[in-house]
Length: 150
Image 1 (cartoon, rainbow, N blue to C red):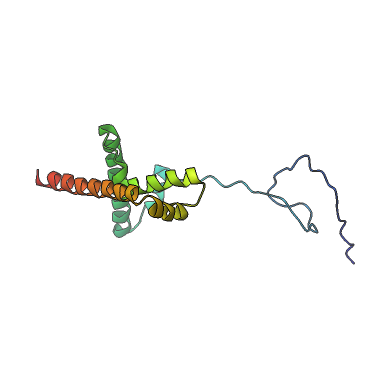
Image 2: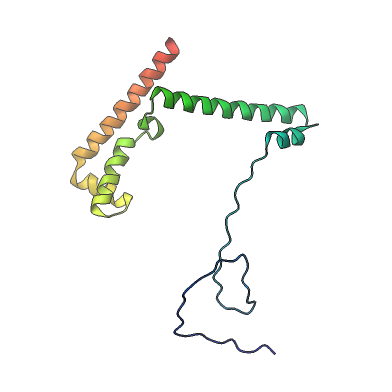
């Protein structure tokens, strides 16, 4: 017959050691944390070995993914090198969100509550932020059109 567990009261904890598995199988409370495994990516030789003998369809898919990845990296490098980093291209309503975030931090409220509060108290600021976002969108469309027509 299992013995009754001992209850600990007024316990002062000076140290907690992290372990993979709890050591006491009868414990009611176990404090433990496992480390997150680091992601492991295959090397080029492992990829080549894995793809050896693969069907042509699979090889085309992998080549397409590699080409898309390289193009993405090239575009990102070009954008950074030219200094064409436009926050509004990444986040279309950047000015509005920035306005709400600033109000949220000042008033210590949630994003949604800050948006409603701003709309009620300062609709002029909200309208101006929307106008800036719309102007940035129109400018992006004009730039895109000009690039394709050149």
